[in-house]
Image 1 (cartoon, helix red, strand yellow):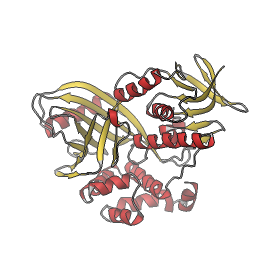
Image 2: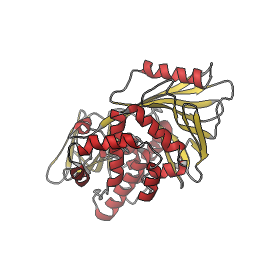
Image 3: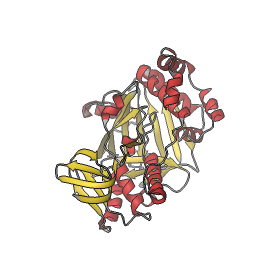
Image 4: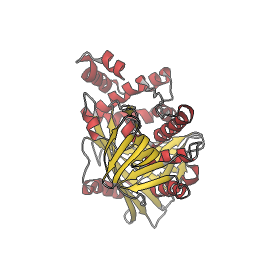
Length: 391
């Protein structure tokens, strides 16, 4: 078997991000194996995140906005979030950037293969694929095991979406303002919203996102998207230049930091997706950076990940509200954004607020669904202490 210093399974966002961080560190001479069952050459999807500082992958950020809109029915609010900016990176640009690094580094090997299993012997990990077996000192696995999401009392939902990249003849869009959420109960009454990234006055991504237990057929997304575009945006003629479709697992399952002695879970498989929002890109970059720093300093990747129990508690409550009271969840989003400054909300969603700020935010929300959720999850089962302790 070929022996590598590190093996990465899955050439998605987390796998490729780790390649990038390794390549730009003192570990750049290490032999790295990257395994995926397919090449990453198409756009596939976009990744978005917000930041106050220079963004990750600044050279390939496709578009940034410092003005954000939130709309609920006929109530609309637009604010500047400066010095924050909301950034968009296209999948194709991201993959090309990392692949160009790989092309100049002979120590990085890509194998197009399907992973069958990973097992450990006394001093390394072995990866079994349909193209052969490989060994590595450490394995970083980004392929989610969806059985995890159904374990114990974990709440598991899906954030699923379908989007259209469109072009119009007339200048329709305000190119310097993105729409984070547009809830239109008259079009869709459930836990779902429309999302608009305007790239120019003529081009935009318009997406429909839904929170539920199961994803939909394309035709169902298109029904609501066409209604929103024609009846709300009043766009009668447009050209579809591309589409994107995805599913993001939203769960409060407590993911293991490691499996065995030589395996570490990364990306969504390692719990980097924020349960209540689905945002993952920023957390992946932070995880990749910490892995590399720990490898440089201690020769192993297993840094201590300190979960913020307070925010995990908030996430669990909100996931349960979406599951049990979907209509109430949209009203919580309404109050969260319409009654608070967007910059405060972004800090809260980044888990960078103190308790007093959080109480100020909560004081403007609907209390009843949260109280019902606490009763559903904890009081009935007398398990609040056990849950906090296990988290």
